[in-house]
Amino acid sequence: MPESASSGYLATCSDRARNTQCSDSILCTCADLDNLAMEYLPIFVDIKQQTCLVAGGGPIALRKLENLLRAGAMVRIVSPTLVPELAARIDAPNIIWHQRRFQDADLQGARLVIAATDDRGVNRQIADLAKAAGIPVNVADQPEDCSFIMPSIIDRSPVVVAVSTGSASPVLARMIRARLESLVPAGYGRLAELCARYRNRVKERFDQQRDRRRFWDRVLQGGVAERIFSGHDDEADAAMERELAAGGSPSDVGEVYLVGAGPGDPDLLTFRALRLMQQADVVVYDRLVAKPIIDMVRRDAEHIYVGKQRNQHTMRQEQINALLARLAKQGHRVLRLKGGDPFIFGRGGEEIDTLAAEGVPFQVVPGITAANGCACYGGIPLTHRDYAQSVTFVTGHLKDGSMNLNWEQLAQPQQTLVFYMGLVGLPIIISNLIEHGVPADMPIALVQQGTTHMQKVYAGTLRSILGQVQADPPAPPTLVIVGKVVQLRDKLAWFSTIPDPNQGATTPLLPGD
Ligand code: SAH
Image (tube, rainbow, N blue to C red; front, side, top):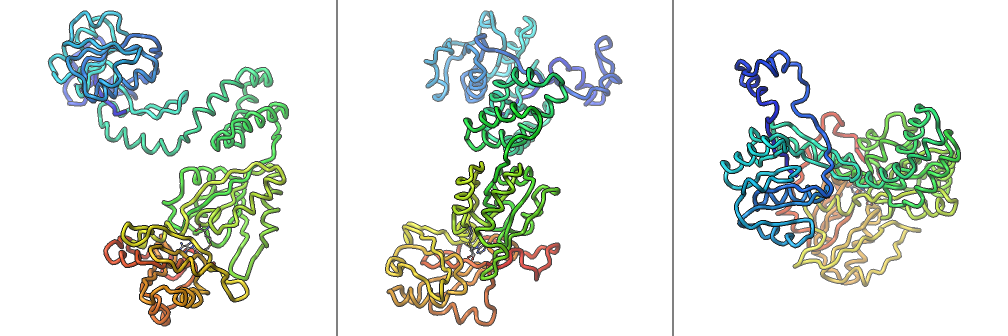
């Protein structure tokens, strides 16, 4: 909801802004006003079942009406006409519409007034009457006539965050709101409800306020909150019961967050990934996670590197699975950070399989997989009405020097193929595709270090590509994209890589696969 603004009660303050002498000698002196920290007192008003008057039937009236209704008001609308969206809602039991112009008597019994007609004179007249009657009034786009303003809000009811810049800039307020949206997870409302449910019991359990605060600190930053955010409300209740039973000392096993870190560009992390990265106690990561992303993990978290490079596993998969379970059982919040998406060629399934078997709570956060990241940043739409009706993600990993794939299916026309881990086996991929009927002039792209400032794209055809890259062979990680969509790159490539001087142009951001 956009903010509309006013000066209202502090009308004399505007004199200060204009640098003129303040005119009100009783209520204010300019010196006193200079000490004011806030132009408005933010308060939350209970308007449930109370009559609120909205004068006007346009889009602004509609916006304000929606918020009044969300807060449980009975709304009286006065307007000769209504925009269609407003007209569509008029049958609701909590709305009464008077199809005419405003009359003084409309103010009767009103708890709040919104003046949003298209006539500034009428709006002012309504505001004057409301103020004289002691009813708070907000006037759309006429800050000087308001006695209250409506902030931009982030609604996670019962948690509501309100932002106002006074009358300075509704656009700025909206920008701040957008930032806060990303910081306040959608589950905060349900978390607050849980707090309300347990409030009395926590009070009974801990006499001292200090102990209560410590308890809530742990609950709100730990597993209980995370279980709410990941949609496991029942588990959150069970964890809460355990916390209460443990009476202050950490009771619980920790939790594992299996998080997709995306293909390299830190901007492609999800809000949830970032939040979990900043609250984990231990991070377990491997080669495919970009350094700038590792740097965003909570500073004092313990970092455990588990390697995983082609044919050179620092820790075997079973050992990693066991490590995650062990750390969580010790009570840690364990972040298992994976490149791309954990469920796409990431062995994420195996890792949580062990956790599930051992009863360790976990949640999985999707990440942007290399195919999405590399295709977008390479200017290659993976599907296109004219060229590809499907896209297939394939592993190009060699087992005993060969690839056991359904080549006939992969050779069908009108599709895009994306090979992960396909660099070493590239000659085998190409010869098999051609052998199974794919034209040798089929476009192919190799995207190296996709989405990072080190990204490099090699484009050619099945016939030409190996010769093309001979002098400057691509290094891992590289994604292979085969299909007619690759040629769209000529028009659509948009991402240019300007080496970041701080990163050192020769150091790969993403070590190999
Ligand atoms: N779970 C990951 C994939 C792991 S398999 C995901 O969803 O992206 C590893 C392979 O992914 C690499 O061999 C390479 O083919 C591909 N890959 C991952 N990140 C890449 C990147 N930034 N650029 C190019 N290829 C990438």
